Amino acid sequence: MTHLNRYTCEEAFRRLDDYLDRELSADEMTLVHEHLEICAGCAREFNFEASVLRGVREKLRQIELPDSLQARILAVLGKARQ
Amino acid sequence: MPTESDNLLDDRLTGQAATAQAAAPLGADEFQVLLVEVLPSAFAYALRLTRNRADAEDLVQDAALRAFRASATFEAGTNFKAWIFRILTRCFWANHRRRQRRPNTIDFDDTPDLYLYARSAEHGLPWQGEDPARALIDRLGTERVSEAIAQLPEEYGVVCTLYFMEEFAYHEIADVLEVPVGTVRSRLHRGRKMLQKALWFLAEESGVVTELTQREGDA
Image 1 (cartoon, each protein chain N blue to C red):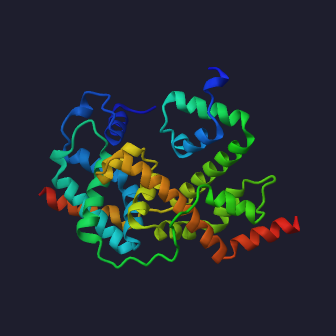
Image 2: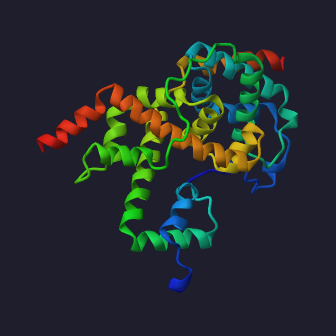
């Protein structure tokens, strides 16, 4: 791939969310990745955003299933099967 | 090493009908096994929707029973978890959305991109030797991060919940909410910006920003 089809900062930034979510095509992923390798400013912004996503995700996943709920639901399903 | 039955369970949960058995109709016993597997995530999702543990338990139970009664309609080879979440979401809209939602205290209009990044830099939060976003979110803690999600307008909060808690892809969220993928993409992009504003608001309100700024000044 030549430098002629590299993304500018604006083009890379427009794809920030989709890049972090891996929702871009393989070619677009490569172009964004290449831009981040040569642009420290964008790389810093992308890393910050990725870290926000990771942090929020980890915090929200700390919810446990109440002990009694599974038994309660299975009992209801048992009755429905009869 | 995973057994054949483990592989079948994985295929059902993810919708990758790699085996001939995965395409067979869903029996009552198998339904139960699959349901138990997704119950923790379903409860967490229900809790985000209802914001109340008792209501979340009722919602999951209601959805489980409806799903069981409709199990013949489950399309073999599709994603069981997304299917259950879709039923749970429908139950929520239909029967469990009773409580008056708390009024939003944050003005989300025109929230700029990179909101947290810009505000963190503006306030001189630590950049050397530490991940600044991580430092902020760790100090906010689970309760405040949950509160930030709860501050979002409902249509954005639901998409963000599915995205952050379950790591569903855009098309899976679209499947659960029965909306086009483009709607998920735009709500998620906007919701993420709003969430950053809510996180910053809570970080300021709770003194986390001051704490981090002082720490940087002491260093």
